[in-house]
Length: 371
Image (cartoon, rainbow, N blue to C red; front, side, top):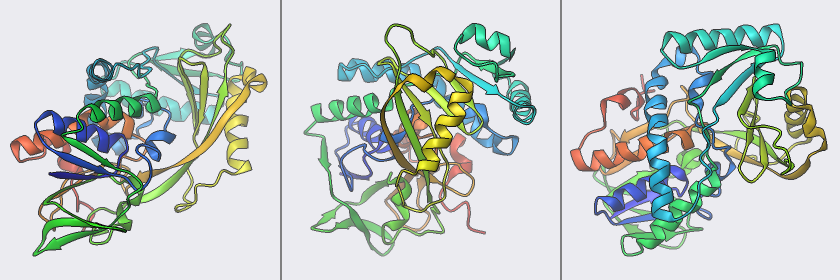
C-alpha cells in the first residue's frame, strides 16, 4: 500500500496513475481534498513565459508537461465524465511602460532563442486580439501554445475518478500527518493525531506544509509558503471582455468558460498567514484596471488566498529521499503545480515501474541544496 500525504492536484494525479498500474493507495489530507494551493490557483499552463535565463533548467520540464496536457485533459474528461474547462486561446504578455517593455523583451528574446513559438506585437495588434485592452498597453508578445484550465474542475474530475476505484483508493480527509515513523532509516508508517498507519511506501505531496511533518529533513526538502491573494469578477454573458490570458508584470487576468475573470496574484513572504488584505486586493484591481478598464463595472464573486510551496531555486523537489528508504518527494512546485501535474505523476509512476527517476529531473532531486 502506498500512502500519499497531500490531496492537491499533485497527490491526486499520482494516486490516479498508481491505481492505473495496480497499486493500492491511501490519500491523506489535513483538510478536505484539494482545498489548499490547488484550489487557490488560476489554472495557467504558461509558466515558461516569465522564466529568467537563470531558470533555464525548468524550461524542458515545463514544455514536456505543457505538451502532455491535451492528452491528460482528454483522459480526465473521458474517465470522469466531467468538463475541466481546458482552453486553447493562448496567452498575451503585455507591457505598459518602458521598463516593463524592456523586461518583456528580455523574456521574449530568451524564449525565441530557445525555439518557443512566440511573436512580438504592438499595442494596436494586441487590441486587435483583445478590443477592450486599454491604450496603456504599449506592446507585448503572444504565445498561442500557452493555455489554461479550470483547476477546480480538474480536482473534481480527479476525485470523481478515484472514488470510482474505491477498492484501490482510500481517502482520509481532515487527517493531519504529524510524523513519519521509521525503523533503521526505513519508513514503517505515519502517525496522525488519532492513529498510526503502517506502510513502507510514502509519497510526500504536502506542499507548503512539508516541513511541518516530523522526521522530514528540512535540509533535504527546504520549502516555505509564499502567499498569493486573488479575486474573481463576473463578466457579462452578452460580451466576453477577454478571451486570452492577459499577463502583465505582477498581475494576470484569466477568463473562464463560466464568465468568471480571475485576477491574481500577489507574492508575499508572510509565513502561514492566509489573511486577505485591503492593500493586496486593491493593487491587483488597480493594475488590472489599467489594462482592462471595463472591469470597473464587474461584480466581485469572491476573493481568496493560497500558499504556494516554494523552494530556494523555485523548482520542484522530485524523487526518493537520500536518508529514508521508502520515502519519495513530489512537492515544492511553487506556482506550477497545475502545469506540472501530468509530468510529475508520470515520473512517479515510472519510478514505481522502473526503479529510477527520469533524467529530465536530475536537477530537481531531494538534497540538492545541501553543500
